Length: 418
Image 1 (tube, rainbow, N blue to C red):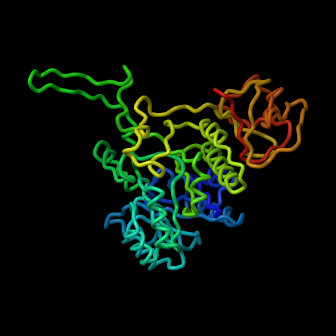
Image 2 (cartoon, rainbow, N blue to C red):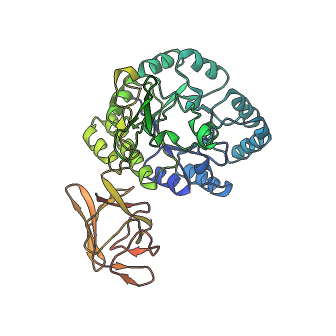
Image 3 (cartoon, helix red, strand yellow):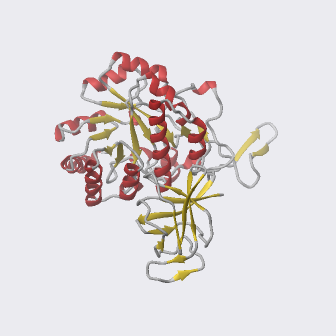
C-alpha cells in the first residue's frame, strides 16, 4: 500500500515542534494576515518561523506556508513582499487559494511548489486539470468531495498530488465560503479573521402571521439553539480503507489555533493509524478512544465517505464544545521538570503521553514512573520546584517547574480522566 504523508498544524513554534516530535511527516503554518488563520499567524514572527523551518528540515520533514487568504487590491504590494520573504526561508511549498496569487507566487518564487487550498473548492476532474496545467503540484480537495470523485481525479491526473482533511473542525458553509462573521462583527472569514459565529447559540422564533402569535424555539432551556454548529471531522476509523484505495497522497489534520495537547494527540493517533494500516494491525476502537480525550464538538466522518443527504449526524445542536474524556495536567518543557496545567497533588495517579517510547520504571523521593496495563503513569510523592520550594499542591497558574523522579522526553504530556 502507498503510505500517505501525515500533515499536522503548526499554530506556533511550540506546536510545530510537538507535531514533528509526535510523528508528522510535514506541518503547515504561516506568518501575517495573508494566512487564513490570522490569530495563528500572529503566533509566529519572521525569526520564529525561520527557526521552525530549520527545526523541520533538520529532522528531514517538510513545511508548507499558508498564503491562502483572499487579498484586496490595497494589499497586493504587501503580498508581493511577503511571498518574497517566505521564498527566502526555503519552505517546501505554498498553500494558495486564488489563481491570481498562484500566478504571483510562480513569478516571485518559481522554485517553491504550489499546493491549492481547499478554499478553491476543487470537486472534479475539470477543475483539477485546470490547476494542474497552470502549475499546481497538489490540490487540497474541497471538504465536500467524495472518495469516488478523488478516484476519478487520480485516474485522469496520476501525477497530481491529492491532499484531504482527516480530522478537525468542519465549517458550516461550503468549504469555508462564509460571510456570517463579516455580517455580524466585521471579521472577514476569507481573510483569516473568522469569529466562528456559527458556533454561537441563537434564539429562534416562529410567527403565525394571521394571528400574530410568536413561538420561541429552544433545544435546551437557558442555552439556546446551536443551529449552525457542525461536528468535528474524524476519519481515523476509515484510514485503512482510504489507504487501500491508493488515491490520497497526504492526510491533513485541521487545528492551528487548537491546544498543544490537541496537536500532540491527533498527530500521534493518525501516525499510529497510518502505520498500523500499512502493517496490518489496525485498531479502530483505540483511535476513537484516544481522540475522544481531546475537546471536540462531537465527531462525524463528514462527506468523504457518505454524501450529505445520506446521513444527518454532522450537526451538534446541543452544545458548542464537549470537554473530552481527559484533562491535561502538565507538560514537560525541560527533561527533569514539568509545568502544571491543572490541579496536581501528591499521590495523584497521572497518565503519561510521550513522543518517544518509555522503557525504564523509576521510583525515588520525588515520585514513581511505572507501566500498568500497557500505559505509563506518574505518581508524585512530593512537589518540589526548581528553586527548592515544596508545594502541597500546584495549579495551572503556578509557573514554577516541578521536579520529576527521572528525565522524560520534552513535550511529554500528563493527563487525568475526568
